[in-house]
Length: 335
Image (tube, rainbow, N blue to C red; front, side, top):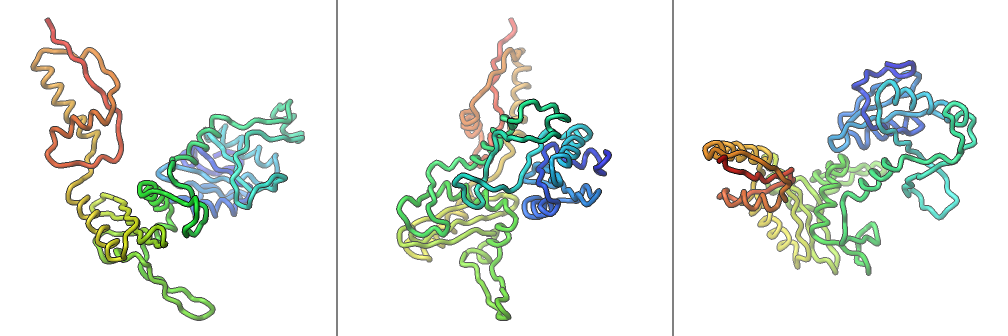
């Protein structure tokens, strides 16, 4: 607890998003964070802490003006050990920007006496944190879509508008982490009241409600693309996304999707690689001990090569979600 903040130190994340208006904090928390809770309400400065993709995030208002932001940023850094504060908000522009474009600020200019005297800024041109900006840029590029180019938001055929099955799966996986999208694509039927008239909207995904575990995501058709279906399935904690493109008919699209899904669940399973490696390592240590040998060197090992060797010892095909650090052990017998 500090002078202007009533939170406990563990209530505030290491990274804080800071809009000016508390209402924007509420909007961000409800729209983007899971398990969000109010952690401050002193003087109406309502702040929230929740989780975005398993990472704890705090959204804290700055209030109006530099002095107000100075108070809250100072106490967050000084009293709560916050590492990053990312100021977010709206602005006007003299350049050719479009509405809702995102601008990553590299430096700012102020003639504020607050910054000059209290913070000892002698240069009114203030640079942002280059390392933090770099992390934000990398995060924005995390999907790494190299073969996708969208011209229109509706997806109808147009020259230069293209993607691939693999990158559609990446986009689907990203979209399903957004709570509202996940809810929409998993809903089979929804009633909408339009000026007193009830209209029933039915999801066109023919596998939703028909095949075990299907929880999204979307059908599609154009003359150029044919019948398409991106499907998300969860069975026993095993999540997969399948993509079928260019089918001649809806029936073929459905059959191919079902065949893909059933093949995956029949032939693949999730393996805890770390547990598997640790188990094998214990066996190696026993063998080394029996050979009266010592581990004399540990070097980095490419995980794909390591997995291929591990697969030789496994009868059933396995599906590995993420690589972990792998090592090879150089042993030498005692003489």
